[in-house]
Image (cartoon, rainbow, N blue to C red; front, side, top):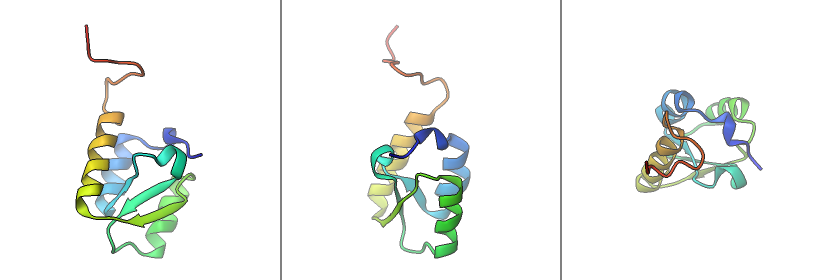
Length: 88
């Protein structure tokens, strides 16, 4: 199991996305990082150093990475609390 507490909005925006990477939506159980095809071994090692739960790197299409990016931005957005339904 991967600890999603390792991921924050700054890491997502400034580290992962700038390198063409984003955690899979099921990162907590899979440890998968989605990436474009241009990721080298040094980049993978840096990500593994920062995210100890990153176990797999999977090359995916742009649409899949964009969907995962939207998911993580929503998950990590400020003001979102566990159990928040958005209703008053």
